[in-house]
Length: 371
Image 1 (cartoon, rainbow, N blue to C red):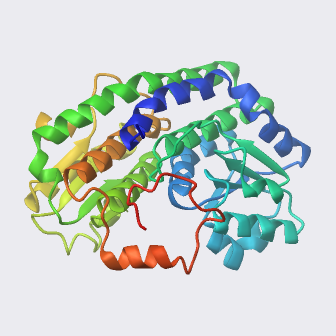
Image 2 (image 1 turned 180 degrees about the vertical axis):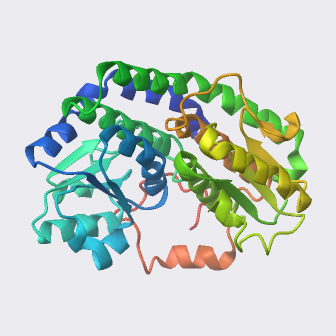
């Protein structure tokens, strides 16, 4: 029997634990590459869910490394920013290792004489033929194209890499290193609790989550990556328009198309600097729609509209468990509505394959079964 998205979601905590337990071994090659080439900062080149995984890890990496982390999509890098990388460590990211835009970015780096690494979820991939170093981030098997375990494990791997690199460069004290490591391990315990909580809230409010209008996701900072990945996952599975905004920016124009039919999910960072404003926005948005839900331990909304569990971790690592809420919702919403059926014209577009996005066919199980 083929595994579902939910199976891989539930496998995620074990995968994170495996990466954290063997973090020194798994990040060693990247760390040595950084030091050997005397890099200053990191440029992450990624698209889709890999981009969002990097976006989730970026605030943690910057805080721990005390260095600039650039995140850019492959197309923009190739055509607009390839000459700005300087002494940064270039890391292209692709779970399949066969994304054509990532391969093109690696080729551009090589043409420019810049050493480059590639993070991938597969040992057998085309990126190995181009990159100076290819590292598997140890996601393990994930044969559903709408990746979930891959996104969270990528963010975890990047956080672990930043922690080990900072320690090697003597930019972090041992006590602080241990404190952040403890927070990372804490996310493994919270993940399954929030997954079960999400299922409970979904079935309590089934009609809210199975409407056919827009889904809006709001957050900021560490969890803007969570919101972005949630929007992507809901859009590509349920085929419902789903958009992520920074919470404050939503008030500056994007709110005007909103209607009472919209579903709005607000993701709190659980930190004083942003939480108060984010939660105030969430409460105020109920004037537009009753379908407002908050992922927070301190929500102003009723329990039936709040995703929360008894444990929490540092805001910088919280995407490692907050992602599970949106991933689970994407799966449940799709199963309860259209079961991954896009418009016939989208199927036609995919079947024609005029602008291929992968260098190999049949890399993952295609839930949409486009023939």
